[in-house]
Length: 458
Image (cartoon, rainbow, N blue to C red):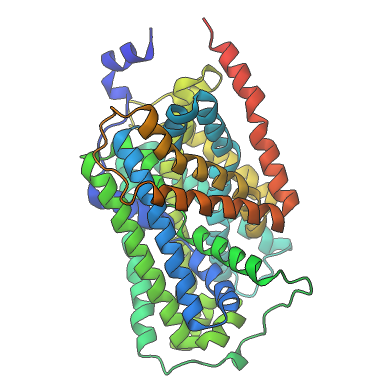
């Protein structure tokens, strides 16, 4: 029986339109606003050298993210199906391109992103459970790794139970997280000005510091990493109610809202610590919390970061499983991943495999920084291909209905594509070994594609 006939007879085994505009916006905001802002802000402060440059970097990052979101909005409203980039790349360049995207997301990118947020949650969670413990070795490290694995497994189990449970978990975590950030912002306004850089330890120096251009590029990479997640809407497009309107609205509202939030947070950091204090801070959230609330501020912020990381982690788990699901529906080699459970309304096998791979990376890497380096180059390769797919598909498939067309076409897609090329170049220059390994794994997907194609022949 072909897939079309199966879907006609068993409609309950396919994705349902259950996500409202509020659900969709919470998904985007919940994924973007993880703990990245607390990791990135000190580095950007050091790189910028002035308050004006600091805010300029965050504004540029927000505008570039909005440009990418507009590209995805056109593609997602034209092809509102599960799989996101997998669908667009397949239609623009052929099945091999979609397969490579699904392959690299399955084995590297999505498990790496999930592991990344799990590490953040576990580090701050362990600091609450065992204050003063050494999290780099011994019992502290074991506790951190256990918390990271448990977070992945528990949230994956919640999303296996059903999409309703998954989306309400996401909504709750996002609302609580934003309220917590709001408390910090309001308190910072009434703080007694900067605590001064002398209170904070000086930043580590690098004898082989890169040139000014590369410093700017690396700062922009970190800023855009902090904005990462707006494209997740494309992966659940088939589950969005009134996709022709709500996909664009959710992408714009989520991206613009997060940009405003990040600017406010940096303003709060700057007001509380000063530029020198920001640049020298090794844990800016904790420093701000202690400056505002000396007795309990550090623990409050640690708890807030835990919630933020869980919100991002749940969003990544929820949306990410739709990628291997799309891969499994079209390639026999991965057919089990393409099964949609009618009882729970979720891709159970895809969620399970995704969770196991993420746990393997947590145990194997044991490091936040190594996870970022492992995923960077292939991520931006596919962002580049997807942004150019807007142009390719307009020419190849002009008759496909497009409820939304990118504002500023073709300049906006081309600018975003050029930015992606810059980020790929920067990753290869700065960490050639890690970037090279991930690109080699990407290319290894080609023979696997040929095998999958051979097995798929009748």
